[in-house]
Length: 227
Image (tube, rainbow, N blue to C red; front, top):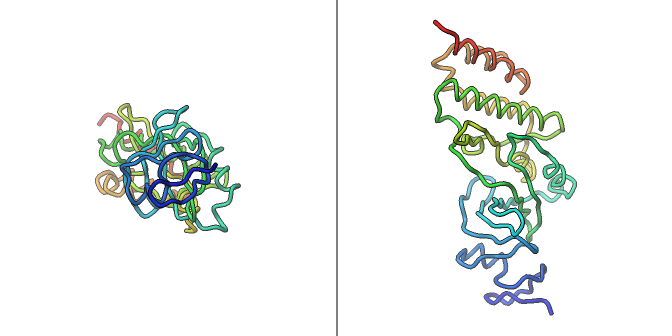
């Protein structure tokens, strides 16, 4: 017998016990079960791309779950599988995905570290280079971010960068292009460019992730050179 939600009486299509996701989103204290192994926890944030929850997977441990109001003609299984197949050391790995009503949810590794922009110049450039490496990898495979912000470029305690939410903007039916990603990262570096002319020059010259990565690497060498 298919279990029903104890709050609203709706049948659970995933055959999982407990409250349905709709009730959980309205009243988060009771966790929801997504599929066989994922337990949804507290809401972490709500932003322009949807809602993010902390969660726990029986196999993976701590994970991050983002719900996106998806555009049906864009958020196809093929598009979601392309995101799940993307692997890079500086991209938050996508472990899986699913659908709930008119939303898709993406299960990924959790967000850790501080937002981009809180480091000294040399460390900031190092973080930007890692992010650009990840973006160039995605761009070469036909994917773009489309919504880069400091909070979506996380810097870990050892300076290791993870880019979050790549491809989510496109799933929501909004434009996402490689050129837009380069321009967005350049904007994140404008405060540094105002203080260091080599960085400003790099931002003016580059139009692609690979180009900006090369220009910023040269700027970093000049920044670190003895005076």
